[in-house]
Figure 1 (tube, rainbow, N blue to C red):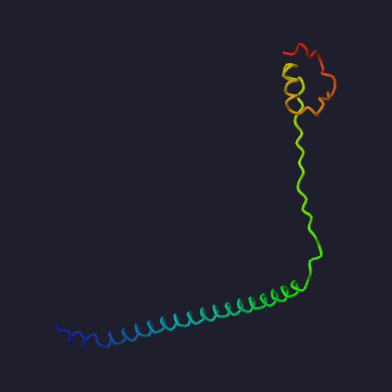
Figure 2: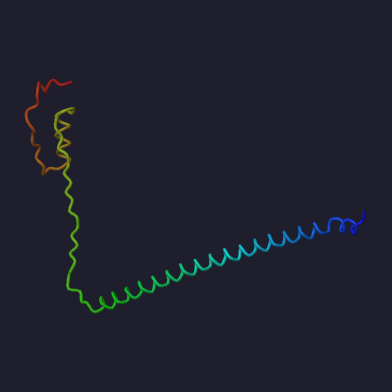
Length: 128
């Protein structure tokens, strides 16, 4: 069999198949163009909204700057630093020997008196 014989036998079927394929391809292409056109329209609308908002904000900023240029500063700002007092600890005899407590208290700060909180309960001299 030659191609001519096959074309005569299946020719009408091939023509119908080619027409269907052409319609499908054309529809697919047209749908792509339609979707692209919709996306482009949405992007243009969004960009137009952004440009309008930027123009509005720019006008407002320009009006504020013009108003600020006419004002004169009549206030002064006082910056006060943070004052921090560090109190050095006063050691008492709980676990240390009296000589060590006296030495620690003299080293920490001579201006702070070592006030006792009260009497030590029990016999503190014989503590282990």
